[in-house]
Length: 203
Image (tube, rainbow, N blue to C red; front, side, top):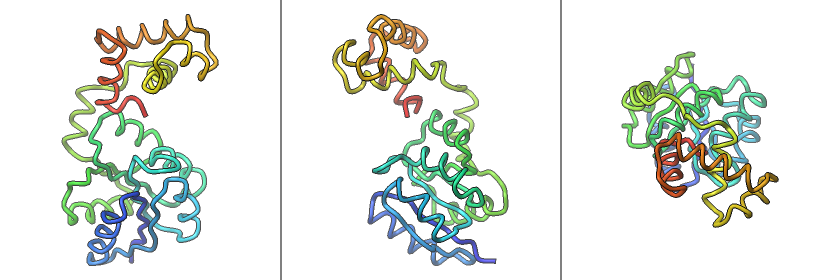
């Protein structure tokens, strides 16, 4: 049986190279490719792939959100995240979104092809080093609201701006930022953002 694969990757050269290499693998056929996250659902409905390979950072919507939407819109299609971002937070988010696989882009093409075959067969495949790191680190200590406020702080200079964007009071924003800084063992808001981003806890 031939495994039908869809590629979603915004870097055109990498997408083309991956399609070409996978087409050389026995039993795998690349039936379509897209460069934007908001094109994934439509492409899956059109091509009916067995497995969709999704990057995380793409225009439109990211790969994690695309995976969440596929779970409802194209439940037959298995999802694999293939990314440069080996962050435990992204792994947790991907699994929560229904992904069956999570590999890094530096994996050999034979390893990727093997993972595609396993995922198509109903197995789960996770980069081993990342899986170990995820088990040792655990999940994010931040509440969803704390993560939302900290993420909003990346693009704003003032508490008032964050409060206005999130429809919260300035006091509430201060409290959430303070809690996030404390939980992450940071000294400043900037340091807290850096820590959370490095672990993939701000998506």
